[in-house]
Length: 307
Ligand code: WA2
Image 1 (tube, rainbow, N blue to C red):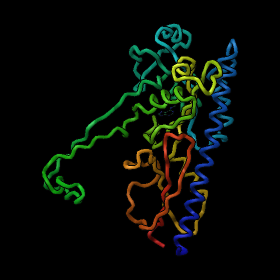
Image 2: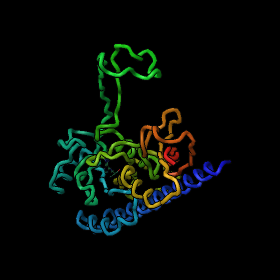
Image 3: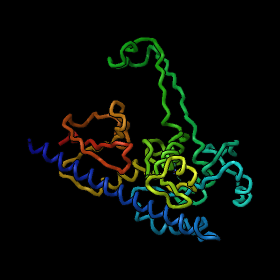
Image 4: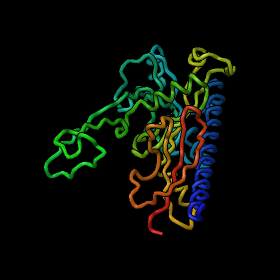
């Protein structure tokens, strides 16, 4: 292999390993926080944790979670307990759109949050809706012709209909994570989406918190019944991976993309530029393991064209 190729492989592997390691230590620390809430909130009466304690502890230990912009605990509340819960908290459960939640079978309002993401306090993390909306772009005679790959739309006066669910910070990602975390008992990740407030591209990590320890053989029904809440956080991939990669100086400038390739025919961009203009065709793909066997991730590296 040419030297340029070898160098690209080693630079990509180094970045992939570094990202995977920082991801793993962050996940491990969130696991420890889930145990902390179980021990000092659920199994002590009265609870030894309140919002102020949680905020202090998570602020002082944030160095342990280098890729997370913040962590929070969402408590499971059944509809029958809602009134009592809201009286105790002194606030009402709100949807992700910050409106009082309409009646649901159950809710997952955030009761403890790191101050960096305090805007999710009182929000029901199960309230995300499947959200599809349409952008209609009419072609005017002045607009440039579309590239050939758009087939019949090429240079035609048709309307281009784009369906997208990623650009509004109100999705079903958190809800799906909660359902999968409590059914499996494992840490789970969402696919990449725009996080609340920052609107940065990232993924959410969720650990289930059970009322009592469950055997590995527990059924999904038993797991759901024993669920007390959810401890999770947001990987702000867009800004924190940037910080991480900047620490690695390279002899040549490279561009790094991270993809969620769970569905190999539809790779979802998780980090890096959308367009490859200005970068070499020569590329290297490094495997990534972020610890959720349900999701597959890859890193792709290219050289910048200016040598
Ligand atoms: N945390 C921070 N920003 C977000 C977000 C989130 N979820 N979702 C969208 N933007 C408390 O799974 C439980 C945190 C969800 C955990």
